[in-house]
Length: 361
Image 1 (tube, rainbow, N blue to C red):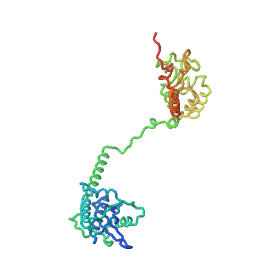
Image 2: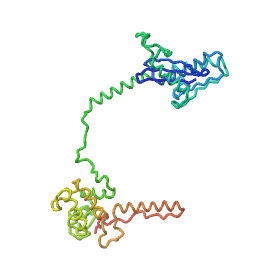
Image 3: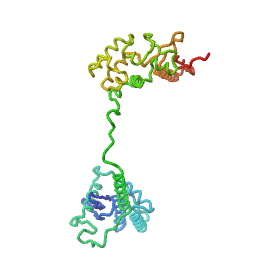
Image 4: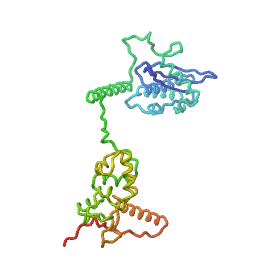
């Protein structure tokens, strides 16, 4: 036998039981009304199939029922309270009737694939939809619209009650939320939106751009102010004060790169270098690409040379220290893979001079 349950879009439910007699298909089609769920219909179909098997005379020695609802199969194994309990109890009663009539009977409820060309499953599914649609001319059991007394409603399943409760709760939640929120959505001002040019650049380049934009960057003036450097002097041209303005406009070490930068700024804005303040230049989004190109061709904001008398090995930037540690880790993993002894790196790397505190005499 094959069973199937169905619930249509108009909330009508029904089930069907189909079996083959010779070359023709026979079966039962039952309409369950508008207060049931598809799960209930699947459970009811299994109970009805067992009842049909119990009514066969003589009692068969083997009964196999196929369904595509695994949840319904599991429900038949327990009588615990909940959706489908009524049909589970009925199924157990029919099983007991079959065993009394034939103690050696074998009863199997098996799962089969749905909508995969299994003839019996396709037939049962078609009849279940027909039963839910309540067509009397097709031999559908159950009350119809015409002969059902209005004062006698069809039974309502527990699963259907839970659905109604859940739908009402969601409706109340939406109404509550709608009364507390406005239809006007928050829109971030254009001035606060991320710069797409910077977002599309590399992480290393952006990590130099943003400190220069804020002023908290690797310049002589800032390092001297934070007491990481003994003098604010420019380490490329020995100008008394190395500022952002000096690096972008005056430093002779980057004269060629500065020329290219300000040519691009002129094309974008029509203003020359003397009409720009550095903080205004970094805030102008149309100039972001020109600044990124400038930084990529220079070492500004990237490295701090060692002061005279210091160890040259102490010259390092934050990114270089990170790369050095990453390379050590790669060498360690490679050595372990080859079974070689791993030489432990020093516990602390050399401290850059601008990060060391001044000696107190």
